[in-house]
Image (cartoon, rainbow over all chains, first blue to last red; front, top):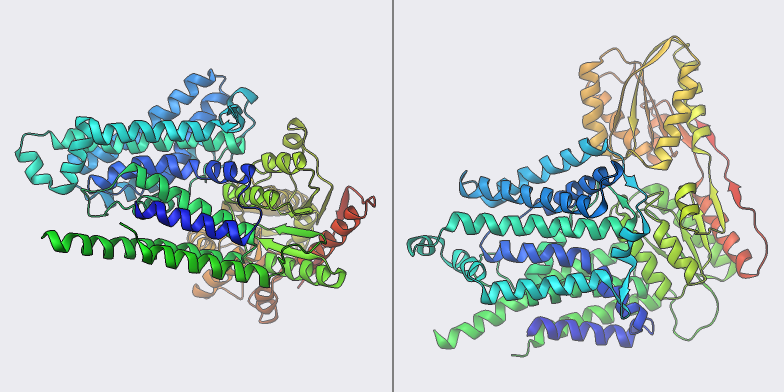
Length: 306
Length: 311
């Protein structure tokens, strides 16, 4: 795993550069900071492997969070309010899927539209204002720990475990690769491509809603402007993780490492006190270089065999 | 397969980053306190001025200062990550301009737990949220935005002779700073029965959005005589929209923050006035207060920074 090597080198470099990087509390910190993008990136991996893209995830984080906040404010029991948020996210994903499969829109366009519509709905539902102040029981989702491991990290790892199982062992996963590899051939072999593609966007909507619950718990506030540009971070995590934007290849394990690389890099740059301007240069460079190297190596690996 | 290229490049980046880190004053093993100033963003002149004030004070006191900010002004989550990382870095005092009045409270709780005093600058933390989380701040340094809004309102009232139509460009709804400025402005205008606010819309603190919103308002209310924008960035967007409609002579634009661009626009007669907060002074006071905290001196819970009208 080359990306894993990259992550390790990055960590070793930071270990040498600053005494504050390798401490238990900072490492917990870094993993925790990767959870929100990490969770969203699970759905994005499915979408990208299927040959699509989902630009709406950031806005879905806002819609789901505001749905949860609005229901909670109306004294709906919190588990039901959380279920409502997850349903809202999944439904938006289903609309994306329908627009792409039935409407035959390119995924870029369908989800670009959803990005704007969902943001607008979040602002309308909330009247543009954040909804704040949730009970401690719910906030435990962000603050709670099991055996010293923060709950969001456990949720993220469980999600990656489940997603890895689905992609490697379940028909949905295998068809996702097949659709991304060659959609026509997959359809001709009798697979209901529309249904499986729609499911992929539903997964993306569902995990975006899950991420929104983690975000609301973390900030103790549901914001209609939450999640702006998260889609780009999620796409970056997937691509650094070795998935091809052309579809048909990739893995969630790679994505997890990609998400960790992004958060280790940000954390390290903060610890080192690097100027905020230079941080953006560094992050952009790492994204591009990681993919360049990955492509070059893949080309080299594929040459001898044919 | 070993991917040497990736390793080398990431390694080089880390090395470059650590060199920059050292240049900025992080010399390992050197004692002496480090202060961290976390602002909302470093692409707004207001916070760059604040950084300058803080840096000058830190240099003269011989204290190390780290300044960081999220890429986007409204990204509270990223700001929280920065605060968490600075806590890990064990800075001695945290000087913080909250991106969200309520959302930042969990980060303050974490600083409290690490025994790092928190000095809040410019934007207040929601008092109720602070209390319910049992969080503590050492002091608040900033201007009274309600009063600034009132001064802007009084100026508009005088300028229009107590009679006319006004449009308002709001900040992001729910942001304490913008809401307070708006409240002060509306209260002042309400005292003049001849004045009406015919349109009041948000441009999310941004110049390009303000341009579009102002253009739209000019379409629906061509007879407005004044626009009040809750910051200069938006005011300057409105100034451009008004210029594009060739209406500069008959619409007075009033902004907030007294940025250099706004001062220039006032000199050129393109803008009527702005409210001067003093971000440099805020930065300076924040560092001075932090150095007092480090010497266990008592500092006031509130430290107002004066406001002026620039016209």
